[in-house]
Image 1 (cartoon, rainbow, N blue to C red):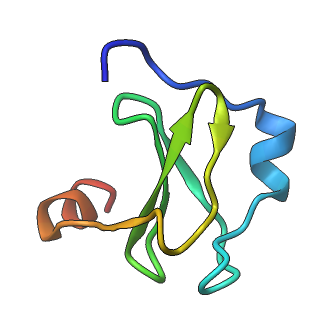
Image 2 (tube, rainbow, N blue to C red):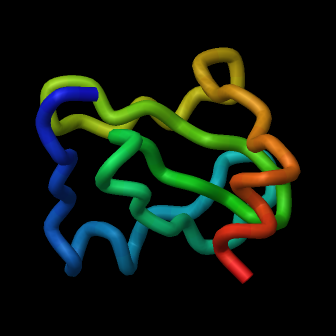
Length: 68
């Protein structure tokens, strides 16, 4: 992704993973919101999080390890 994603920190505190209801973490360099519990990455498109499990991709083992 060419530009870094930004989500207001107050909004990020309210957002949860629709699959697990766990908190989401912003991966600005990837333009995604990550959930460690469900191991899914949700895209951010035009500044709007797409919190649909059908739109999510699985996190790789490398991505999971990098967030430890």
